[in-house]
Image 1 (cartoon, rainbow, N blue to C red):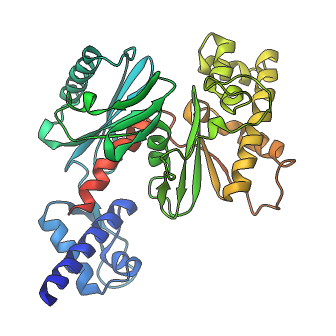
Image 2: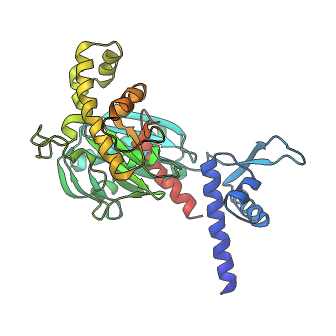
Image 3: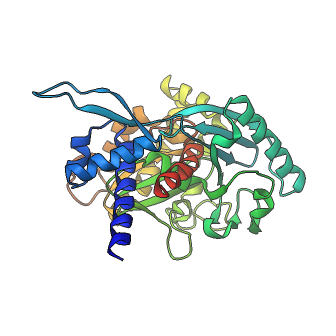
Length: 371
């Protein structure tokens, strides 16, 4: 019994060390022992085990501060790979990442969604072609993560509802059976948050400003899903009673005022063109942006008053918003109740492929959890 406990403890430490090295990118044995509160012999044994398994390797030496130079350790990024697949109403996007979540290949194709065998079969063929074109052997692909706009119960492979795809209560195994790899389904905003909040160690919210408004909540180092997997539906908070009608049927929802379509429609559906006009101080774009940000500041302020944490602006609009953060922050001051220690508002890091990268990371994390 005692021997079994020691074995389990050692295996647990190996997982901790592996995840720490993954998070840090490059680190040393001394840093591992210190950060994880491990004895040096334990840290050394864990590192040895991981090197024997071919999971980590030495990538150089640190500058010496006296004595022998410390070896720099890193995960072998080419060990395995993972694929992210993003489904929208009119497109599919693929992304291949390595063990360090570096993007190896990506592809976006037009494919109108239909809940049919033909659509799923076609999607599967395009997926296999993407993997082949990426020059990654299929036996090195850990799995395929699939991002879907809607409320998803991942543990049951079930889509509860998707207004965007006009679906309700769908068994997602109807798609999974076409894919010859382990599959994981997740809500699109949650997927993007998983990429943006990678290795984050404090509370944060992700506000997705795409063709629909949504988000995700990251509390105590993990995603908060809610009692019924409906958390983060920020797009359906009422911000203008008796206001514009939302696609959900209610009036005055955030989505009706801060969807990316509000801006893109000004330039015939091209959001990049809208922000180009905005940078050129086009009068119509400036007026539309002023009205858009009026409601956006209300949403952000309400979320911050509720959760008191950093807020990351993502989605299609978030990809362009970084230059406008200072002005947005100034405009928010009239809504804020407490004196701030600093700006809690941040633009997303991923301009593209956030949802695909985020859901692909699931299989990378699973790999390390099962060492």
